[in-house]
Length: 221
Image (cartoon, rainbow, N blue to C red):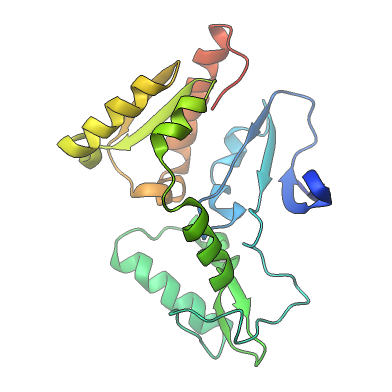
């Protein structure tokens, strides 16, 4: 994997990791507040047969030369005197919820940012969080799904599948897309499932991609 600065519209750049391949591309997007390192355990399953494109969403990576000012870090998150202290607390929260495994290690390390006075805190800046809430919080998912043209894989947990309200919403969203598949994961917690069970979830996605391409569909969602 190599790291590049991909150029978007209006000459905006985005930090991205890619492998050198001319095979079909698969793009991995992390969740809001995350980093591209959430995919570390999944990528080895795809690098041989696909060109993998793994960006850090804009605003989610601290410039190495930037030290966070009080104005940039105004939010209710812990601030620590050392990087080790920050990582220890972040890990303890995962351990408490029985989520921790080694796949979280590089991810947590990528979420640390240094403040102007030499302390350490989360990379997820208040201005980025606020922009996300103001722009996407009230997004109508039914409008989003109506626009999707490619097949969609819905990954849901066993607990979600047993919740009547969630099942009702899931069936409704599935009715809005042209083609979809559903996979029930027996374990996992929301977006963390990609670090909890990277191999299992990665294989499920690979199976979906193979089934879609076998049926002659070139675009995958």
